[in-house]
Image (cartoon, rainbow, N blue to C red; front, side, top):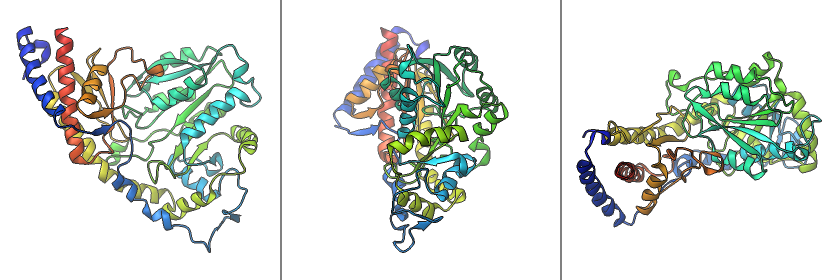
Length: 425
């Protein structure tokens, strides 16, 4: 079939009739399929059932710490080492929290607002606070900064990372206090920051001494393929900022949320010694300590970084066919039609589909009416405002292969129908 851009109005009208008939057939099927969130499938969760028996009641002491009792505010040393192995940092740079890295990020923004970082003025006392948001990006990040009334500034993402020319200009404003980053297998495109981008971030000279990069390394071990050349290594941001004399500029986050159980994993933050001491001051007022038995459970089950890597190969075996099916469907059904483009990530949890401008909302609306739930249009942008109305986050991991295949069939039909409608006005 030739591109929709090459079709006459009559040909487009005929195509619309054909697509509409097929669409109505799907509506009659009363489908209920979901590609809305990047959730692990039940088969992935079952990989971690061994965690449930990984703690022996007779052996609850770890590194001299009784995991059943109070204390150990910064986490047990073995859990620090486990999380540090994921991002190649020093265990002494890590604090272990609860199950959610998003919760840690929320708390860190809250600390900036209410107590300030390293003696700086709390942001709540300032007339305006601004934040750099690479887009498309992670909707829950933007939800945190929006919650605190922080003004979010869009910066375009490239395949190598954020547009650093814009970032370097924006940080000259002392009101700019932070920047969201998902550096490896970015949410939602699956991009990996290049060495040049990481070095330029590390070398930033922000006007605000309390400017912080929130380095959310959520997908650092979430490879889809085993081949090393497809796993795309990334520079260590903590090492790079120390080389530049900016070691206090980074908060790095990691978790086992999609490695073990999303609702019952462990999460941590790596940062400079100054930042860790600063966090522990307020943390001591917030809690007596996090779930050390769960930390011990994870240490006993995974043992070390090698154990995590071997476990992630099992995850990859489950999700790889789903990503490959997604890309295959897009290529077979949409390539050459002029209706959009898509990413082909080698890790992470999402594929980004970019429709023609002005078609994303309509595509998602059509899909919903045909029984396929997807992330809302605009979600990967601050305030849910996609300036081009073109970005759709596709989450292929949760459905079974059969369910995914059917959901994708509906989706590609909706992409075509929305594109034809737009062409015809």
